[in-house]
Image 1 (cartoon, rainbow, N blue to C red):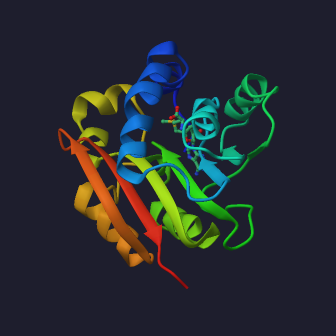
Image 2 (tube, rainbow, N blue to C red; image 1 turned 135 degrees about the vertical axis):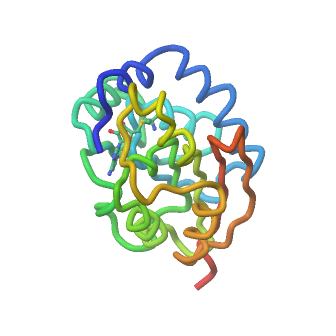
Image 3 (cartoon, rainbow, N blue to C red; image 1 turned 60 degrees about the vertical axis):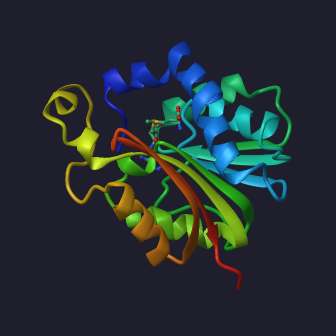
Length: 198
Ligand SMILES: C[S@@+](CC[C@H](N)C(=O)[O-])C[C@H]1O[C@@H](n2cnc3c(N)ncnc32)[C@H](O)[C@@H]1O
């Protein structure tokens, strides 16, 4: 689901960059460590800050990244035009345009909760990870998405959302081994999970 105007503004500003750079990425790195292998994918890359973090802080050598919104991909393209090893496209997390087992790591910086059929997105992420490949995810929970105040300003799918246990259990159902989880105010969560060995 595309972002509404309010959330587009919330995502494309220096405060969001600072939160992603100084809080979310360090937390995920502390939980899951740097990459064990150089090929990374970011689903829902927005304007490309995450791609920079994967290259500069997680040790990725090549980053593929896509977003449902062509305007976001255009922004990311401008931002990353001088970076080597980056490939961007417009795409959908429920139909990832990549062969099976093609990545060492996949990153989700707050996008899966935007996907109506989010379990299919987890299945796709699992499919494109190599055995023992690692998912790093930062997510937003049902309690915030369905909060009457937030519903007035942000637009999200409202049915079949998840909390910490729901996301963790869905990861396990899709064949992940959940390595670490953290939550904040029962509204936000961080997850590191590995595709099981073949
Ligand atoms: C909350 S923003 C996060 C953007 C970026 N990851 C960040 O952290 O700044 C969610 C992003 O997911 C994208 N998105 C929503 N549904 C998607 C889908 N099915 N497949 C890929 N991207 C999707 C939106 O266009 C938006 O850029």
